[in-house]
Length: 347
Image (cartoon, rainbow, N blue to C red; front, side, top):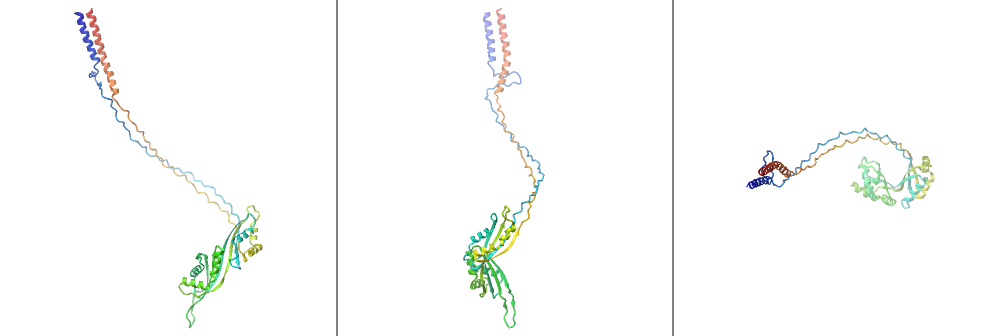
């Protein structure tokens, strides 16, 4: 019977110990500890901090000291001889060859010389009108007669445009003398102008249209044909021929004879000039100022930071550990009691 009682007591104690250990959901007895729960871990939403921009920083403008380039003197251009050759053509523009004339002029000067020539074909005409004609009307009428632009016609007015009163007679106008030079760029065009300019009835009709009044046929002086060769010669760079020699070559009798024979013309050489330009100094460099430093803005955007998800898993583990620490001393005491009873009752 004694041993049976002991067995019942031991069984009861062990059942209690088992109940203590197997019941983790009991409310903790120590203050400040949180009961474990079986809820699933929850993750807090990530939080993003707004970007922050640092205020712009502007560097103060810096001005470099002014720098002035030293003046440089350009070399003086080569001395040149310029002149105009006028060829009064005896046969008009019929047998004129512009290329041959240009080659003849160039061949007059030594090799290495820079020769630049231009040809201008001219027709000179003179009209004596019984009426007063002004310069503007004369220019328009002659341009219309010769089918050229007004810019190609140069007019000189002679005589009067005044009224002359005579007793027992009606007032009459003094005659007007008109001298005109019409220029062309080709011998063929000049030949057409040469023919038209000598037409007395044609110029009368043209002037009547321009002035709006009847103009009688003027007295026409036969038109003259001529060529003007404007030339510029620069001496050779090797110094083999000086400028005086070039000037003499331009006015030599051999030169005029060559051109006269070639164009069947009377040759006149005019406006011979020796041109030497003074050295020109390049403008001094103006002070240069370095541009001000541009404003620099350094926006500092803090990186988006996301908070780590907070879960209750760690807290639950902590609670279980606290619970186990709280329960094990009780179990130890209970086992000690059982052991003590067994020893006592057996004794």
